[in-house]
Image (cartoon, rainbow, N blue to C red; front, side, top):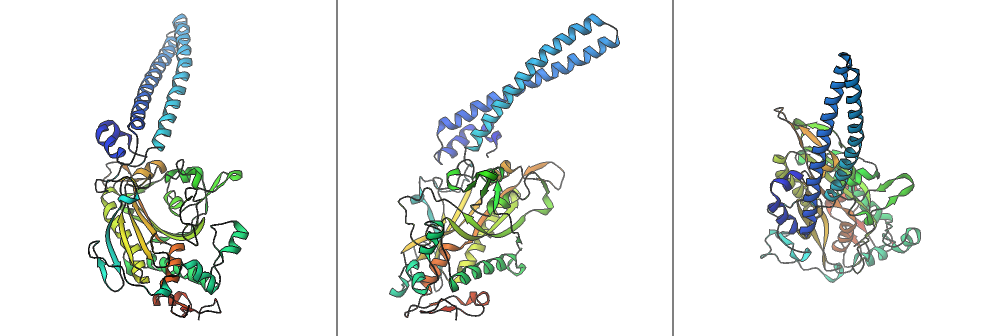
Length: 448
């Protein structure tokens, strides 16, 4: 949630920035009004508490002085004030809860560098990369030519090679749940091991600590990242146990140190995790949901960090480069997109998306979002650190990125790796994770 002090001290600036995100001015004004009610309720309650404490002391002094009549009078006055205080405390709690619910519904304040826009149509591509041409600006980028055999959609290739079986998956679980087979399953496992090795290896920079978090979490855990209450319809809930299936490893990793105070000397904390992820894709009506383009369950490797405000921006770029590095090793054509204010996730301060070109669908497919949340999530999770100079306790900044989500990467790899005879030959970098075998040929779904 946003720091309410910013709204108190700079209401016009906060209003302008939030309205860029589509927040109604009336919503901001309601929060200001309820915050003022809360502050007044707390002031009245605290004054009553102080007065009750004063009366209690006077009662004791009257008894000590053997002034029974005065003591009785003061006790009666204290009882009356105590009854009123109970009402004042209930009022303050009620207004505080109202304010909290309003805060939970307010998105993060975007960074000054975020492009202003209304939808994904206003997102800004900032650079492209191809295996042969390297990095290119949007004005200089030329899409590589792909042979016709690479312009076959992955769901057709997967069926031909018997490595993807969407029909049997639908029989078991319903549509948009994939089933990988043979070399297709091995490819998925190889991608996960490949990414985890890169993130945990200190030869690639400061390593990330590997964690295997729970797949099901409590409501407060999902609330801490901003997924609740806003995205309740997108999540899978196990009502009997009051648990939710995680939509991303970001959720449990953000709460790993919830309600704790870290030391500034331990920051930044770098974590990585491979998990299954679950999303209802409730808003996917009218969108292309064929094959692996949108699925309810997928595997993903996440990188996440806690940092100080001073460390956060450079760490954001470092995490983006990590995700890009994986795409470069895999030899995939991609672009980096700076999300505009109208397309930012609710919790995000700034987000870069990585989109890879799919020749089989002729689309740019998002495969990673690398986000800086400022202290927005940390305020929800009560995630703090103590400064080294002893000057105080501050909220951490949190950052996370998909590095990478595999459903679409899998899909694009089988398209770009396809040969003229229908076989697929995967990138050399994956060979150590595929038992030294890289190809799947027609007539068998095994790697050879």
